[in-house]
Amino acid sequence: MSPTSMARWAKHHQIPTRRGGAGHNPALRALADGVTAPPLRPALERRGGREHLRNFAAAASYPTLGAAADALNVKWFTLVGQINRLERDLGGPLLERAVRGRSMRLTALGRRAKRAINKALPEQATSPTPPQ
Image (cartoon, rainbow, N blue to C red; front, top):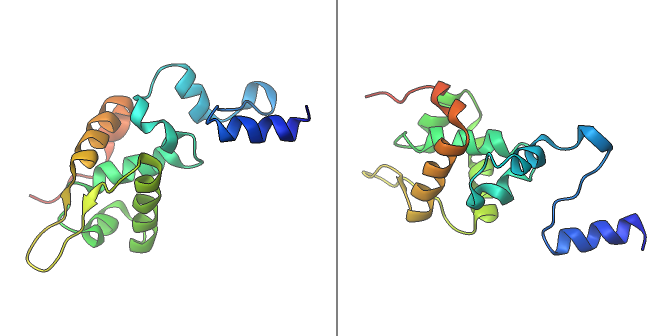
């Protein structure tokens, strides 16, 4: 079986692959070390997944994604794209978006994901704190 066929088969069955010897993807090393909670695995296998998870956890404390983006020093559309990607990876909506007169809120999946992020990525505590 060719390496390409094996990689395709592994991806189809959601089996992480190791490429390039000892220097393979840090997210896969973290999974092997047991650092992450199972629900976060799809996001962590993606490039930039840790940053997306950290940004989501920090943004959840703000009333709007615009305010969160300003505080996190990222563009609004970048933050929205990261959260949309996480929603696809984790299998459902994480936030009820803000509408006139109502701040955004976490869904049940969003609350579980945020707890798992805070447990799996303790360096999250260094993120900017929302205004009181």
